Image (cartoon, rainbow over all chains, first blue to last red; front, side, top):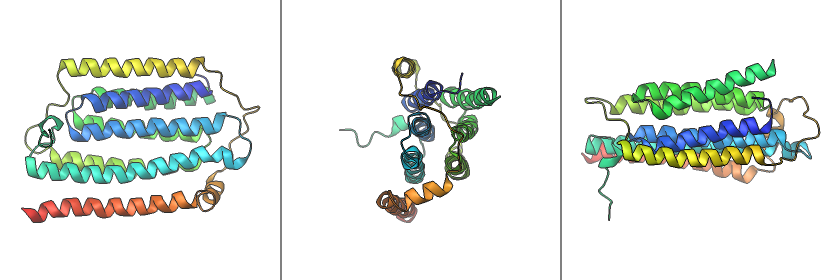
Amino acid sequence: MSYSLPSFLIVSSLLFCLGMFTVLTRRNAIGVLMGIELILNGAGLNFVAFSRFLEPTQTANLLSGQVFTLFIIAIAAAEVAVALAIVLVLYSQMKTIDVEDFKDLRG
Amino acid sequence: MKEIILNLFILLTVVPCLWVALSSNIVHAAFSLLVTLFGVAGLYVLLGADFIGVVQVIVYIGGILVLIIFGVMMTQRGKLLPLSVQLPGRFFGGLLSSIILVALILAARRSKWPAAASLGEPEPTSAAIGDLLLGKYLVAFEVASVLLLVALVGAVLIVRRSVRGE
């Protein structure tokens, strides 16, 4: 693939869709977390690619996409910490991390 | 030369990513995720985002992935879990993902993107990003730091209560 915007968009689409497939089909709760990481990476790659290839009017605008990606990474770190804490608690209480066994809140 | 390196990093990103989605072994999936995240860091650097690339390696590979592997080790005692759902769920998940993938790729290829007049050489970005974080995006920066603190305390609280409650 050539060094152009569509190449990067296609790579990030692949990351997003494989992440979504992982989230939809994994039964292991940690596998679902991995899928979420893939999705967030796809989004971050899109931001950086757009900030590189679309017409930058000034340096501040050029870098805004990168700052967004920085925030995505920070929020992913917070998310994975809380999610793993929840998974560990579920494991200690139910002795499994199979998401199909977590039905206690079903109405 | 640039294209060869680009394609190398794209392969390094996409192939392990397939493995993450399809592998039946959660440990293999975790280590494939490591390679994928490294490939994305390489793509960031190729896009001229040196600072983001380094942050990606430090935070994702050094932090998040270690946490995930730690979680795998903590929860895989005894029997190995059957990893993915049965065939119908896999089929519909794959169908939905493929439809969205085709739509996204068509959108990326068909759209007329307003191209930059000339693609300048990438410059070091750390100083400018620091200026933006402590200037234009100061509020968001502070909110993110509070969010990280709250998430940290929350994670500790969640686990601690369950240990005490038993």
